[in-house]
Image (tube, rainbow, N blue to C red; front, side, top):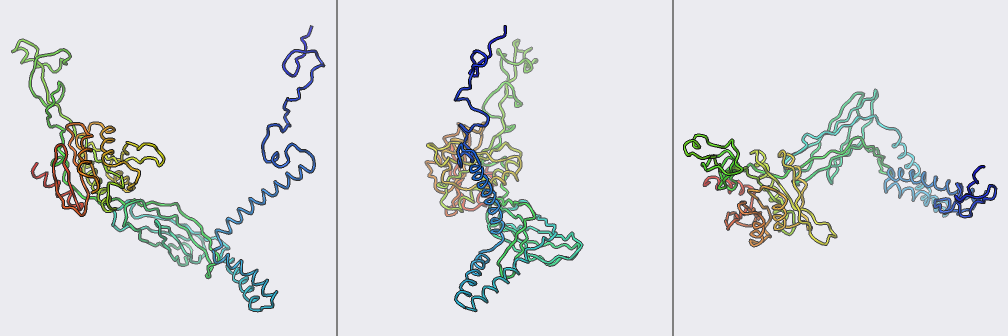
Length: 469
């Protein structure tokens, strides 16, 4: 006996008696469907609905084509060209309508000018364009140049065109002469380096335009290049002496059972390693004697630069602070020391609490550090020197010497509170950048405050402390 045929609702029933449920969706149904067709005609079918949908499709295609054409035309026609296109029909209308021959002449002259301007857009010059920078990195104030090379690889002579090279916020315009077959033209242009930062250069584009300026066609030939303008730094004395004393290989007051600086002998205790047993002393004393060492360590320098706008009275103070941080960091890197250069973290605009964190800069090689320092800027939402010291003390391990670099705004109480964020035994030096103050060094318990007005004052201060060290 065969099993009863299942009904469409999934329950067994008699064969031939099942009926489809009214709420069952079919493959061609529109229930629950939301797309352009349903928004236009809903669930309607038939010739009229298909005609409405076809018309909407044609209109959508036309809109896309018109948008593309308008974008291309808008990129070619100048504001003066749009004015001319508006004047021509008006001049025709009023000229023929009112019988003004002068307006008719203006209209036809506009037509001629528009036709001639259109001829300048025809064709494409077979250039080969290259953009080269003499240097990828320069120091602020140093001369920097870029070179544009244009080559004519065609077998015919090509007419000259205007070449434009965006340089930062400015624009370098180059008038390229006509080039014979295989000819080459090179033009050198200056790059402004008065300000520290990143200067975008390019892309190089050629411009074809009519003499009146009705149309303008730009063709981009190269990618954008970048020039990094480093902050000004000076060579400071080695960090081995003076304010920064390296403890590598120098014994400290802490004793340990395993190091390189021998201190004394003591009796063996549980947990001591056998390799440190002094056998001759053991034989004489009649008991196990082991070596005891003075702990040595390598100093970890931290240079903390505040980015809080409130810590600086002027932009000149901030630029001096960046140069100080760069000079100290580069010196430490070249001395082969363990160094961390950190800057203030930024608090999000709508955060409820300030972000107590630091952002570490690259210290692998001096160029990478200066690259990062070229891009730092003061900000209203950056944490100040006190919070910066607290965050640096928490995030950087093994600090032995900390430099806190700020402007003239922080009070002595704030600097003292910032120095208390570091553990005992950490040497803290606050460098206050104030061009209007008298340079000097004053020492407080656990804190040295160095005030400088010029970058050379940093070198002089470190040389003096090195001389008496």
